[in-house]
Length: 360
Image 1: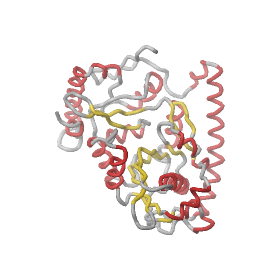
Image 2: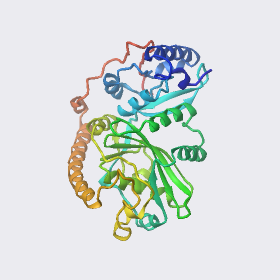
Image 3: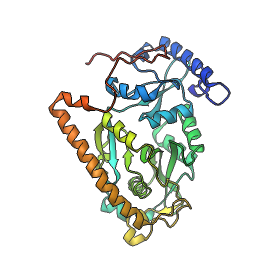
Image 4: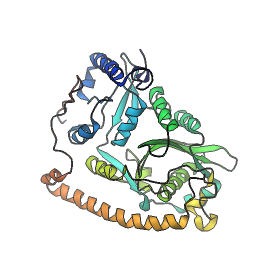
C-alpha cells in the first residue's frame, strides 16, 4: 500500500491524465474495501470545482468530501474554492485519504472586529512574532502537541510543497507563524494559508502561558495591517468566539471568499518583531521594527486603510445579517443565491457518484 502522495504525483513523473487514472483506480479499490465512502462525494484533480463547489454547497449532507490524491496543485485549488483540506487514515490500498472539508457553518472574523483583552496587551511585551522563518519546526511542534491527528505525512508533504512554491501572484500561499519569548525560544505558532485577502488558520501550538493568545491577536493585527479583510478560523470553538469571530452559513462563506480571494495584499512576510508593537503601539512604537523589506508600510497608512475597510465590511456584514434574518423567516429566500440551483451531483469524469443520505 502506497501513500496518496505516491499515487497522485502530478508534475512529478506522471502526466496529469495518468496520475488521475491511477488515483481513480485507487478510489475504486478503496470503495470496494470501505463501502461507506460511496456516500461521500469523490473529488479528483479533474473535477470541475467551479461547477461542483456551489452544487456541493447545497447538496452536501455533512461537511466532507474525499480523495485519494494529495497533489499540491490539487490541494491548493481546493483551498481556493473554499475547502479546508485535512486527512484521515483508512484500511485499504492506500493508508491515508484526503478529506476536503466544506463546513456547514464557518467561523469567520472580520479583522476590524478583533477583540484584544488587557491581559493579552500587557503580556505582548514578552514576545516577538515572525512568519515563514522556521516552517518545519512549526509543523513538528503542532504534531508534537496534538499528535498526527490529521497532519499525516501525505498532507504535510503537500503543504510543504505549497509553502516552498510561495511567491507573489500565487492564488494560494502556505505560511507558518512563529512567536518567540525573551530567551529566543519558539513558544507558540500556527500553520495557515492565504487566498487573496482571506487568511485561513489550520492548526497551532503553544508552549508557554499567554503565548498562544498573544500569537493569535498579533497575527490578527498583522493581517489587518497588511490588507487582509477576512480571517477564516474553520470550525467554531469558544476561544475563537472570544476573539470576535462569528459563524456563517456555508453559502455565505463561499460568497465572501469569492469576493475576496483575488484581492491583493502586502503579504505576510515579517522578521522577528515585537508583539507589543502591534498590540500596544502607544508604548512600543511601530510594529515594523523587525519587518522584512517587503513589509514597510507605515502604521498610519494601515490605520487609514483599515478605517475605509471597516466601513465597507460593516456594510457587507449588515447586508449578510439581513439575508440571514430573512432566511429564518421564509424558506423561499434561499433561492435568491447567486449560485446555480441545486442539481443531482454526478461528476461525469468519475465512476463514483454521491447520493445524499436520508436525514436522521
